[in-house]
Length: 94
Image 1 (cartoon, rainbow, N blue to C red):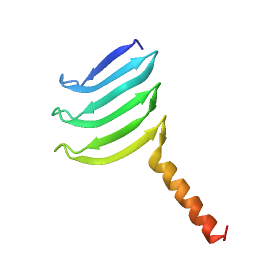
Image 2: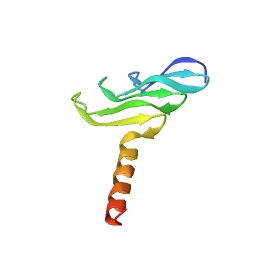
Image 3: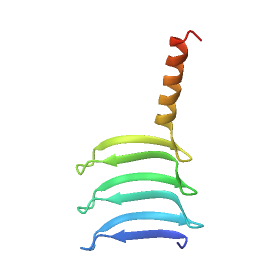
Image 4: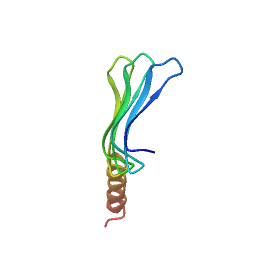
């Protein structure tokens, strides 16, 4: 994969996605679009790993859900694991 912006298209010619690459890895903003042109997903990558905010949108443009990543790991998932670990420790009296 060459460095720079890569654009994919639907068979009908509308933009499907825009992604940037550096050294063969996704790097920077990546956006997927509905056929109608509205943004479907928007996220950022560093060295091929999701980093920062990941948002999925309804066709209306309203955010459906958001996740946060730090170098490929979901912060939400890490928080949940930490939360569960603390509950287990409390139940064990530790």
